Image 1 (tube, rainbow over the protein chains, first blue to last red):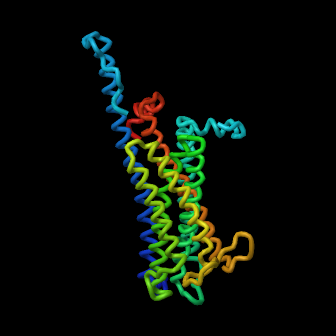
Image 2: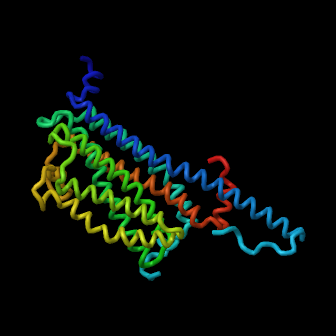
Length: 75
Length: 252
């Protein structure tokens, strides 16, 4: 048995040691990725909201709408 | 705000300042976490000798024990931040408390699963209702309870205050987890590492364990910064500094 094989065998405890390390990394990688996705989604929503707001302000500025909406989105 | 709190701390608790501060630190703490983690893994899996009793199975310790320490450390941070949030109504403290909960739950989950994988070959069972294991499971439920209560409210700040209250009550479980191996007769082994005295572990095994502990601390900082920044953007959605960031950061 060469060095790599004996390393992977973990003295016969491979079935316990490697799953433990796998869980450690999978959970932490998920914990890293989830907030990134949330951030991207949030920034998309914010940009859309700001675009709507500025479009509304331009319309109100042109006088095309006699009663410009007073509230800024529901937040 | 009480005037004994230094001015810089007060400034830092302002959302746009903290957003920039965390953004500057984040790449550094991430790098440190990865670097120290890699060194600890090499030391623990390759350099450290096998244990004379447990063989190579003991190598689970290098992730199990740091994760267990993190589960308690993060709970303590969440408890302190919750207290600050309830007393001084600082928005940043709410964010730190609520965004610590998922990270703490992740580490508690890792602790329970890796402990189970270690228990099977050493004790002959995946799980036993022993004081240490049960109190750690309660810790997981407390984290999940805080997350659930926070999400149950439509108004996020109201939810944060309710969940902060639960977090403070649950702090009583942290010393129970820590001292459970001394207070009750248990299957779980006692502390191997002693901060103030002699550790019952050889240096070959101790340094990877301590390095991994440091790595998980930096990991927590990195994850918390990432989560807190996103949360601040969501909470301050209508403000000008958020608008600038949202419109300036198209592809990051």
